[in-house]
Length: 365
Image (cartoon, rainbow, N blue to C red; front, top):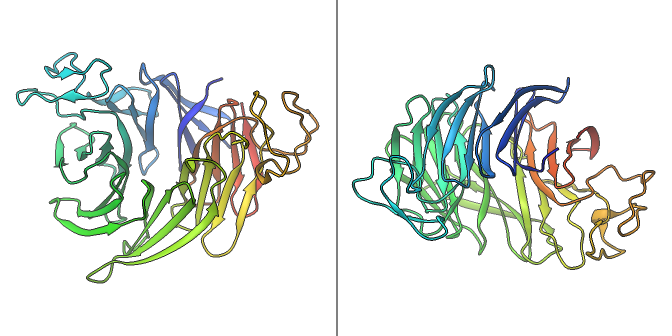
C-alpha cells in the first residue's frame, strides 16, 4: 500500500504514481493490475496515459521523464535531466534542485523537475513543463526535442495541454500567464492573463476554440474559460468555491469536456483535507465528505468537508456513514468521458466517484 501522488485515467485503466517512485496501471472494473514497475528512485511528480492507453509517461523529482509500455512493462524511452550524472557535465547546486547548464552538455532534458506533461492526440509527441520555466515538445519514439520554449515564462510551468487537432499547445505558469502556441513552430498565438495565482490545469474544448483553466489562491478555486476565436481572447471567469485553508486547494483536475472541476485542499490548522469539492461549471457545487483527521490536528465541528462523520479525533468509527478518505487527498483524475473521478489519498486508498451525483463507485486499497 502506497500513497498515490499522481493519477491519470483513460480507456478503462487508471495509472497511479507513488511517493516511492512506483507506477501502477490497473483496470478498476476487474481489479487487474496491468503494470507494476519501479519507474523512478524518487517520487513521481507527474504521469499521463497515451491517448490509446498503451503507454504511460512518467516524470520524477530526479528531473527525468520516461515512457513505459503497459503491455510488456518495458521502458520505451528515458530522457534524463541536468543532474550532473552520467552523460551530464553540468554542475548542480548543493541540493541538486537546479543545475547550471553547460553549453557543451549532451543532455537535452530539464534543469529542474518536470511538473507538467501532456500527450499530443496522435501519441507521437509529449509536451513537458518544468520548474526551470521551460516548455519542451518531444518525439516519444526517439526522445528528440522538437520544440524548445526556454525563456518564454519567467516562473515554473505548472500545466500544459494540446488541442484536439494537435496544432495548438497551451502552457500555464506561476508567472500568472497562460500562453497558447503553434505546437509545430512555437509561434505565440495568445497571451492570456490570469489573476494572482498559478494555473494548475488546462483543457482545450473539443473544437480547440476555447481553453479552460483552473487556478487557486487564498480566496478560492476558480475556473476560467477563454474564447480563442477573436483577435483578443475574451475571458469568462467563474468563482467555484471558497478555499477553507491558507494557501488554497493543492490538488486540481478538470474533466476532458470542461464540465467539472474537482479540488482538494491543503492541510490547515482547523480543517481536515480529506474532502473533495466537485463543481459543475453551471450550477452544482458538490462536496464529497471525508473523515475527521486522525492526527493531532483539530477539525472544526462545522467543517462541511467532513459533514456526517461520526468518527472522533484519533478514533475512527467503522460504522461511519461517510465513504470518503480519512487522510489528505493527494491526487485527482477524471476519466476520458468525464463520467468518473478518481481520488488518491495519504490513507493509501484510491476511490472512484460519479462526479455528477457524488456516488462512490469503487474503493481500492
